[in-house]
Length: 194
View 1 (cartoon, rainbow, N blue to C red):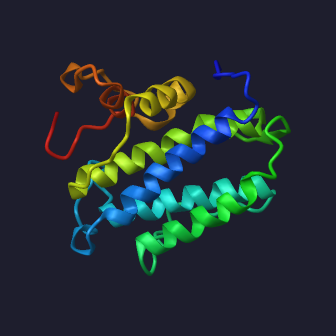
View 2 (view 1 turned 30 degrees about the vertical axis):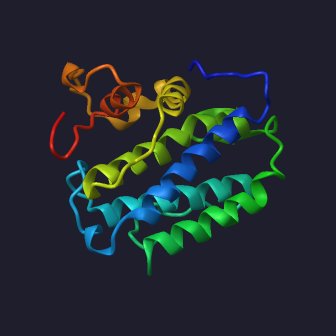
């Protein structure tokens, strides 16, 4: 597995925080009447996707503190308000993340022995992709810039086979935008097509 390694030992953590910030900002701007909108993930509404993504943030906190991880798909993490829940859990993460030793190694069931910085940097794409999912479904501007999409692609390329179907075939209709390429690499197609 080829992980991106930087000279800044907190670069992966900083990348994760930027992706979580984008997610939180998208969730905060979704109008209440849009939460039932269908995402490109056919089993999920925007609210379902937000619940999953907020659960990932909860698990980032759990990994950083050595706590127990939660079921990110139980549907409860966006209650009672997705924006309030997201902000609360992002604030909890921000409160402790500075205390994490980025070079400390822990054992992960998928990655094996991995540093906290590599772990957070690799999984940050999840927050970014779900910010895109929610924005795509609800018509909210995702505000994801090319540099963030490029960094997420570089850090998470080794994970894409875990998130897309076995019969995946690249769809050139996505164009050349770094974000569209990242989205497409996960097997997604926008609600209204490319």
